Length: 100
Image (cartoon, rainbow, N blue to C red):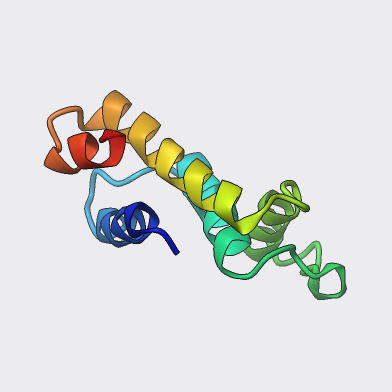
């Protein structure tokens, strides 16, 4: 794992604990890239039931990037955080580190 990815993951995990954290759509973007970077492709045999709405949405988001390399997923995760920070928290010091 790249150090940029590790920093981004730590930052996003902290965001989830704040009231002004990302909305569900943005969280799904982070989730799918994180899972692809750390696990690889989603396992079709583990697709959640249609009645498990949240888990199914997460699985479908992850499955939508099937075949993406772990390295590309890490890079996309960092890019997603940079995009989010530019839109919502442009004064965050980590932004310059990630863009570096």
